[in-house]
Image 1 (cartoon, helix red, strand yellow):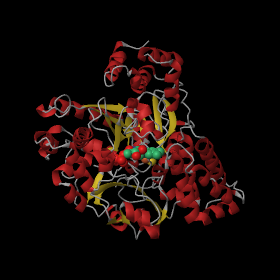
Image 2 (cartoon, helix red, strand yellow):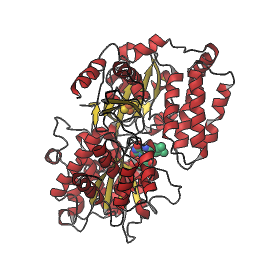
Image 3 (tube, protein in one colour):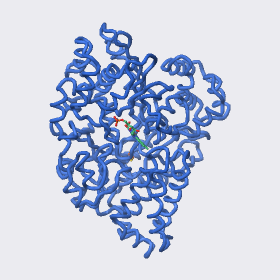
Amino acid sequence: MAILGSINPILTAGLDGDRTWRLADYVARGGYTALRRVLGERIPPNEIIAEVKKSVLRGRGGAGFPTGLKWSFMPRTLPGDKYLVCNSDEGEPGTFKDRDLLRYNPHAVIEGMVIAGYAIGATRGYNYIHGEIWELYQRFEEAIAEARAAGFVGQNILGSDHSFELYAHHGYGAYICGEETALLESIEGKKGQPRFKPPFPASFGLYGQPTTINNTETLASVPFIMNMGGDAYLAAGKPGNGGPKLFSVSGHVNRPGNYELPMGTPFATLLEMAGGVRGGRKLKAVIPGGVSAPVVPGDVMMEATLDYDGVSKAGSMLGSGAVIVMDETTCMVKALERLAFFYHEESCGQCTPCREGTGWLYKIIHRIENGRGRPEDLDLLGSLPGNISGRTICAFGDAAAAPVQSFLKHFRDEFAYHIEHGRCLVPVEVQRAGSSFFTAPAEG
Amino acid sequence: MLTPESLARIDREIAKYPEGQRQSAVMSALAIAQEEKGFLAHETIEYVAHYLGMKPIAALEVATFYNMYDLKPVGRHKLTVCTNLPCMLSGGVHALEYLQEKLGIGLDETTPDGKYTLKQGECMGACGDAPVLLVNNRRMCCKMTPEAIDAMLAELT
Ligand SMILES: Cc1cc2nc3c(=O)[nH]c(=O)nc-3n(C[C@H](O)[C@H](O)[C@H](O)COP(=O)(O)O)c2cc1C
Ligand code: FES
């Protein structure tokens, strides 16, 4: 079980045992009552959107865009096909919450999609599932089949005039396909290269038709919002940051895993729930929202609360809720080198500043890490992000630039030491011990 | 070129998309073809393209864009180890080094008996279970300590 703890859980409430993903279990937990009520009482779509707006549910895919507002952009009365796409591509390093939702609560995702489809006027949906989680792709297909057999998905759902066909699409290893327009290209059977916006997907999306894209966790929250009401959902978080959020904790903690917490919970509480820093060592730094979010020094993070505003005040982003914990055994140059490698590998190659810039970033950080750094490298490195950020079709370029800027800002000394001495400030044996690979089993 | 079983699976994928959008099934079709053939030779890609009514170059673009397709032969068991930062902090890189030493091969190499190929992967969305590795794109193995790796190697035939 990878959901290791919670405070007032909503999405993960009652997930005990290994059959929680089955339809019968979900129904026994109160599943599909929201859909029954929406269709049974013929609640007007704009009332559903109003309820979601009231909940201040903000997109859990990383950008935190208000979900109700996004839905209201859909031209729901326009004739022709309209689509709803669920983004389960979860490739932002550090993030593994959608995997657990698909593993333990896939029917919440399905119910959320059917309700969202009804609200925005979409009659077809796709769930784009991360390539590496084949077993959960298969499980999701099985869950759709269960829902279809029970009349929750398909034509004239529960005898109403609402129809919604739902399918799973399996990715095959491309981080960029998490970006919504690259994802649409990918469903169309092409390379995942982002589209220029505008036009936005709400007017020109999948197959050129109006489309809404939401993250898995966002959609899974919808049935609960309909059941408890937008006000109660908002109250479960904090003003402007509705509801609870799943946090994926990885790195140097004793109990890495997923935790569901109300928005606004102090980071210190989460760290404690995750068993504290591994081996009782000192906290050095935290990346609080997936690797595309700026790194935050440990002491600053210890004072921060986990919500969009709180993390932003600490100088970073809540992003996907992926909390990567680094203790004093971490070499920040090595850490950044690995991230730079990732962005260079995964750049789709469409925009020159990103394709070339990520290559330069990696090359420079790689040579610093390997003792071949030059005195002018720090300034050179500092000058690159500004030439990538904001100069590309999609936000991948910004994502590649943010770690570099923040690592240099907070850990410049470590980079300077590397250049001057040709080696890490943190001794290699210390780094090696930090991973625990050669000592204790990783069991938490 | 592909078995009737593979084609039936591809047909099921095609049925997920609207009329006239057969190309949408190319990702799964290539994955199914790779599962059958072991890797994607150019003839295989061309065959899939024709089956879906798309240009072979467009299918080749897809095959080269996504990391999990193999355009060259790989060993019976392709082991892809995640070394991205969250995994690295919990031994992802060390797990890869351990495997390299045990199998006596480097990254992107195959053992002389054709049994194993070793690859490095990006985040698999399972960082809490680090170190994580994937066997033949399908089976995810979690918390791969030295003992767990030994046990896995003993089990793979
Ligand atoms: C490079 C890049 C990668 C992204 N990866 C993901 C992802 O893995 N999952 C996700 O839900 N959103 C991801 N996004 C955000 C999506 O583009 C989109 O904003 C989101 O799916 C919308 O859903 P939401 O409003 O419910 O958050 C990514 C964005 C960028 C620029
Ligand atoms: S970093 Fe390895 S699974 Fe996420």
